[in-house]
Length: 252
Image 1: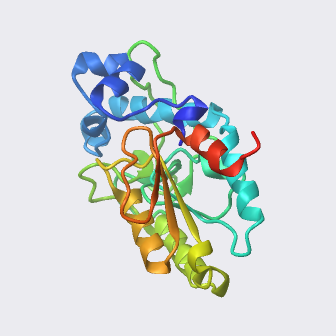
Image 2: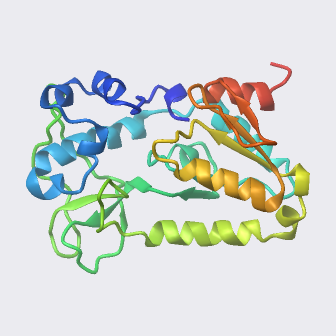
């Protein structure tokens, strides 16, 4: 979804290394870098990677498709709820309120030491990152309660320390929304629009298929690489922006 806003495509090491050449020299792909161990072993590397992304996502303007979705949802009796594995906050930036961030958010932080500090906002947090090496310089973000190193509230690979309560609360609101009569009774009028969700990390694909199946709605899968769908669903081999334009802006 974010690629059409100009954000890098992290699928495959080649795409990732094209966006982040210094990590190619180290032979570190996305899944290797997106690991909480770096906050212990090499905080400058960890915060170089996540600090760069934090500022990138702050500076990126969501593409028009986000606004089309918001306007589409505003016209529906049951409204619209977004479920995303993206951590960039682009849905909220575009004005969508009902969002589940299944893998957390880069715009929120948690304590690396695991103290009792609740998850807090990264608003105002600045990380100095070298554009040549993509390493961060001290001071790194720290816990306001105990002073230990902070990390993004993101579910990383091999991550047993992720604090999930913020996402849990979002999922509780989604569960209540799915139980609304206006949603439960939608039947064939219910539509699940899936955008760019790959099969390598199938969180979103599995969720969208399950919702469409359980509520008897229609799944529309928009994906330029993997548009294959279950029986009864619709697959469009398009990018997110072009796919949304095709189904939400028919006169365009």
